[in-house]
Length: 626
Image (cartoon, rainbow, N blue to C red):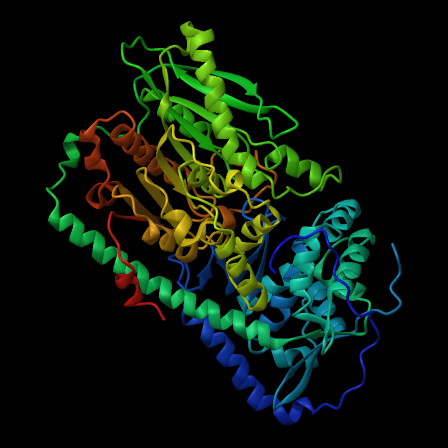
């Protein structure tokens, strides 16, 4: 199954690949060239294009296909991307693992081989790649492939081949020997093989560690050189499956977005017009004053205290102060959403921004420094329980410290969470874990090829105990939830999501490659039964668009992953969350006017386009789904 297990897999020991009969390249060049062109057209004709250049984009990376391999923020490992331009789709799909991550190898790889029936076996010389990377010179043999790639993509390939990934040998060793690392290398070994029928797991692990420990460091060229077999064999079948699924996902995504736009227009036509000019601009900081304090509380299921920052209004008020709790994603901290805490506090809310031990920036930094292990499956239980025990702590403080906390209402609470934090608030808001569905989805993902890399994280839940306590993590004090880019489809499923009874806003980003919009947000929205539900889709948004405190996380994310103008995206979240909680937590129905497509269209600015719908049916989606 697609899960992290402490049980090690047994693989057949490596041997040198047997000699095979091949056909000459010259005889098959014309047919192979047509195949390469088909690969290029299959992707490039279906990709969205940048407004700046006529260059296909996916996930915000220019220059062809971009597949984002798992990251700590989304799943549990470091961020990586690989370019797949035209004929080089074969090379890059197999070798982009260098960014995931001293013995001398008995053999050194000399060539990359792939078989394409009925044309025969084809080769790319590693020496030719190395000459191209270091000198920019294209040899006669390499020109067969290079001549089929646009010059700008060739230059990007050269940059990728030369890029040094600065991970220490200790970090690479610990990662490649961790349960998560072994799982990822095993999946990659289905593409990069030791021979035609043998998974490349051990060879991949050896070459990564040898490259990291060598003076040249971890580059793709050095990784290739350290591969402990003379020939690196690529399996085209899973690559073609990825391309087919990617093409289908792009086509479906475009059609589904059009259907959502149609629904939004229909809802706008049926509602009274919104006089935007008469409404206060909720994107702006409110007039209220607040103070910030930091503290900790104990969660009995954890060995260490849970830190949090609390923002409390200081403006004199007769009414109680409504409470909002914010949960960060994997490899983030309470600094990530400090901007949102300050904004909501300026509009009169009390706000707590949690920091979850075991899945925060500090823990991940320790892992990559070689001093810790990857997050355990128990984080899926401990995180929602952090909210419960925080509320217990604050409830006690309303009695013990009435001057500071006496007006804090802890019986009607709003939650906001992003990514793994989105899972956290859905669970605390009433979604129940469905282990049967989780097992089925993980089995299917293991058996085939999936672009939903968030399943790596969700499938860890299979190692949790199956008890009532772990299945139902709801806290009755939670009365409204906002889930941003949540991971939810497999671990909750239809049955679990349908248990949510409180008002809920689901926020999705079209360029999210870690928690893909269709399976992780759109389908769960369709499964909701609560009457007060909202789906917000942000075109050109990424998994990281709403994160503040850039540079404070475990990884220095490249601009391509963060996406365009995160500060603009943050103002959208500030406005929508203020309106949502004013409507459902402070019971001020006049703020419901903000929760409409006409409002979000009124605040839209390039490069983003927000769409908001309240109703959507599976029948509408099935009309355009394949």
